[in-house]
Image 1 (cartoon, rainbow, N blue to C red):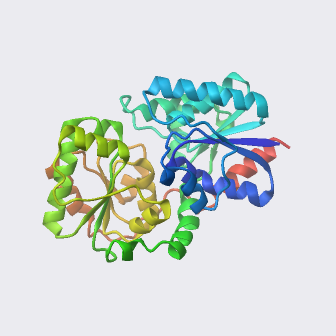
Image 2: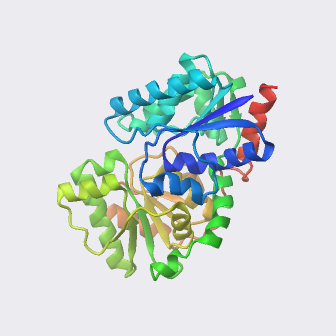
Amino acid sequence: MKICIIFGTRPEIIKFSPIIRELERLDLGFFIIHTNQHYTPYMDSLFLEQLKLPKAKYNLNIGSGKHGEMTGRMIIEIEKVLIKEKPDVVLVQGDTNTVLAGALSAVKLHIKIGHVEAGLRSYFKKMPEETNRILADHCSDYLFAPTKNAKSILLRENIPEKNIFVTGNTVVDAVFQNLELADKKSDILNKLKLKEQEYFLVTAHREENVDDKNRLKGIIEGLNKISEEYNLPVIYPIHPRTAKKIKEFQIEIGNIRLLQPLSYLDFIKLMKNSRLVLTDSGGIQEETCIMQIPCVTLRDNTERPETLEVGSNILAGIEPKKIILSVKKVINKPRIWHNPFGEGKSGKKIIEIIKNDNT
């Protein structure tokens, strides 16, 4: 059996890390295609090295661009590799353009597809990730749903139950495994002169937020109000896309402390020790829930409703007043919510399902 893993962004690498480690542990045949959708050193080679993961066998060097152009170039290059390597199963994770390109390339070549983190829905079609995840689900032979709620969504879309497996989310495995690495290797709190629980951490990079001047301006204003209200620093490791838009829109940063993109181990350590996280990232909504850190989501919807249900997360949107009200609602909430994403054995479950079906 030969498995092909396709990723292109940091979140995909993070959530694939437990699966890759399990494949290595069992000495099963696999290779990696990296589309390089994220292509800075901290989002690519140094990132893999830091997480002690093998280098990709194929780097496609796609980079950024318009959705159609990016996805089309990926399909062309992925197809070449799949024809050459002839894997039995292709694994994709999440909802990026890399996921869509990998799934479409494999299905056209009649190669089995496993979609890790299947069944998530925001029901917001203007979000490109929503289209990617829906199409990937309907191409896939193995749908690895993180929760029973995700399985219910897939069943409502008439996907056969025999193809759906509730495995938990590999992000739980990744948080447990990678926090251990971070505690050993990261000295980021000392470097930034920060104290535990005495700063806010921010990520905001989604197209719907950063490409819209009014939405991005609202987020920045809200972050400044929080810093003033609580007299605590707001730490914002900024995505290159967001930095470019802030400059283009001539938005004043105020008291927000902007950082260059961080290594994942530094970032996860910052997250674990923050007072509260504000984000528009789906993965970080999950990670904060797992680590018992309050989260305020800078969006009007979420494909992680479980975080809202258990009370670890709240939807704030992008209006400054609503952002600060949302912070006030969750900042002092007891951190005793239930983690709905599994016990940290999802990687093992996924590989066991594939192995048993292909031997």
